[in-house]
Image (cartoon, rainbow, N blue to C red; front, side):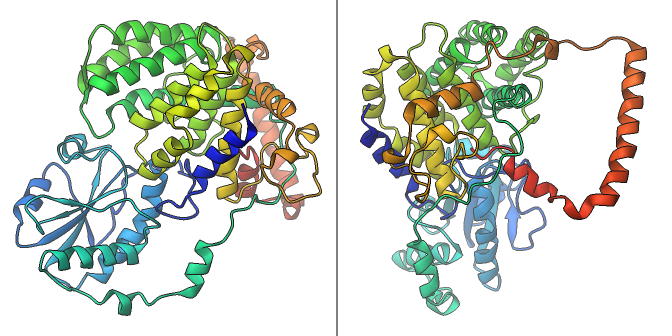
Length: 484
């Protein structure tokens, strides 16, 4: 596949989103709790008060529909709070927010299936949706609100230019070119067995999150095109997920979900619990699909998604063609990933024509698709100002012209070495130690282990007190575990 195809599509990921420093799969912390819980200006709307808001036709309501795991939603939250404060003294307008992970029925009824979604109520007969265009700050929300009110013979409520005077520095920052961050020496070997097992754990956790939450994003019914996409995705997991035990588990799920052509959410969750009970003892490692919140290495759901994507593209087993795996990845982002800008960027970089071109390389094996995912992932690293992965220190043979500024220029890349490195990191079929799967049963051994841990803790505490001035902060260490 021509390198120009890779780079031109990857460039689509550099397009501006709702917030400039957020990638197509931007950062999202483990905190998945609801937003605005302590806000005095943004009212949380739910099944008990949403209809009252709809009936309050004498008041204009601006409502943010969000998901706590959506990176753009979490970064947009402070902007929403700010604009709500700006209008805090205006009695004729109120600001609300709906957590779509907890209020599926509301979001389904309001036809909100991507986040963040902003709707304006009681200005016209139907609610007006704020378009997803450009970088959205509090100023942009206020400007759109005032323009929309003016179109309907209402307002102005505030003078946006006085509240938010133009800032040349902000305009200059928008034009800033994205660059990779400074490379750092890796703390751990990406290819170590411990790291591979942690990534396997994260892949299983993320796969379960998609099954439990993604399939029913802002809806209570899995049917039609979404159902077909769900079946395709689980079939792909059954054909390409790491370890034969786990592929067998997903094969069981395919049979269970095909019993019906549509699923209500409560029925699906009951079925999924039965599936988990039947396969977790046989998974590798045991209980791989026990919890959707148990990340081992990643600190974000989007990191977990990249882990799944990489793992699928390098497994290279079964009857699936590499382009079919890429097509399934595209489907899961299209239908089951709610971040609007993330989805838009990803689909722009992966139109159907790209899948068609990748299919021409199927006979060559998974290399083209593995390199494709690597290119997009490092494009995201560049947007976020992270180092290119792997670094020159981790894989000296992956790059040439290392004295030049880091880039994705084909003149700097050794494709074969990059793919070989990625495969060594994510392909774990024959690399794991079976002993990881076993658990000691001797109570004497357990007591001995606790004693050793206690002794090591005392030694560590003593050393820490003596040498703590030499230690790097925990936050710094975590960010260096795995760049990509």
